[in-house]
Amino acid sequence: MRAKRFYELLPHTADLGIRVRGRSLEDLFRNAARALVDLHTDLRTVVVRERVRILVEGMDTPDLLRRWLAELHYLYETRRLLLPEARFSELAETRLAAEAAGEVFDAARHEARGEIKAVTHHGLSVRRLRSVWVAEVIFDL
Image (tube, rainbow, N blue to C red; front, side):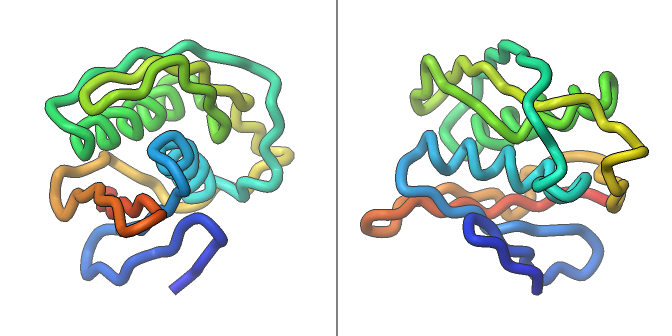
């Protein structure tokens, strides 16, 4: 199980799961974006060259997180954007507005890692445990 300071891989038979932590809900959503980028390539190689405004709505906080990650994944799939940084102008239970930042995938500098098909509802959770927020997300490979 590979572990980073802000996320860890969860054992899963067919797909890929992560557990993400954050001191606040903003921190959790930001760390989830960083984890997604780290699944695509080595996060340490990504620099900020572009900024994108993102607006997402969900039914509740777990669904909002799934839709946030799905939007970031969509931008990676369609524009090859790696967006590990985010500033939130709004983050509520069912809505977020953010400016995500990063750069376009460059095969000369970025190692391509496994292919992700989708962010799933399966096993999705967001909860607060004392002073830390924890989320679990499963990606369809």
